[in-house]
Figure 1 (tube, rainbow, N blue to C red):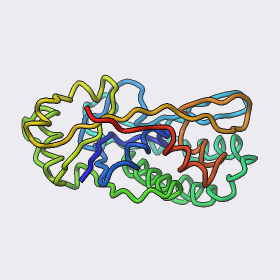
Figure 2 (figure 1 turned 120 degrees about the horizontal axis):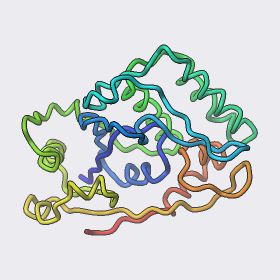
Figure 3 (figure 1 turned 60 degrees about the horizontal axis):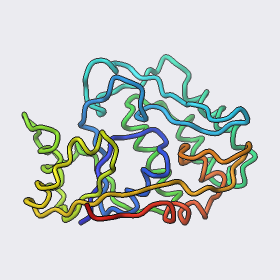
Figure 4 (figure 1 turned 60 degrees about the vertical axis):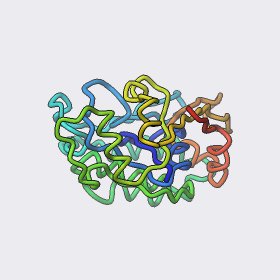
Length: 239
C-alpha cells in the first residue's frame, strides 16, 4: 500500500492532488495542531480580472493550539456567500463553469458548515470526483491511533502501520522534512518516496498564466484535461 499524509486544506492547489493521485490511501492529518499563522488550512487563491485573490474561511480559536478536527468556522460571518460570489464572478465565462458550478454552489450555499475539517473534506471530495481520482481518503482521527506522548514522527509511523503502509510519499518542504528520518523508514521496512511538482501552464482567463492557484482554476478552465495536466506536472522518485 502506498500512503500519503497531509493536513486538510481549503480548495488546494494541484500539487496536493498529485500526491493523492499516486497513493492507495490518503490520510487527512486532522489530528495535527492547527498552526497559528496564515496558511492553506483555511485560505487559497483564485484568479480574477484584477489578478489572484485570496478566499479565506473565517475560523475561531486559531490561537488555542488545538487540532484541525476541533477548528470551528465563524458562522457569524457571511463568508460562504462572499466566496461563491467571488468564484462566480471570476469563472462564469470559463469553458467548464457550467459543468462544475451546480455541485460547487450547493457545497457553499446548500448547508451551514460548523467545522472547518468537514467543509474542507467535502470540498476535497468534490475535487477528487471532478479529477476522476478514486484514492481512499481516511481522516487520521478515524484511525483511532492513540498518540499519547509520541513525537510527530513516531505518530506518523503509527498511522502508517495502522493502514499497512509499504511505501510513503513525502513532500520536500520544511514542514514535511522536519519529520522525515530516512534511516527510520528503512528500519521499519517502509519505502520512502518524494514527489516533485511544477505546474504545467494551461489556458486561463484574465491574462498571463498564474501557477499554483486553487484546483478550481484548472477545473473551470480545462475540464477533462485537468487530470492529464496533473499527471504531466509531477513525478515520484525514491528517497
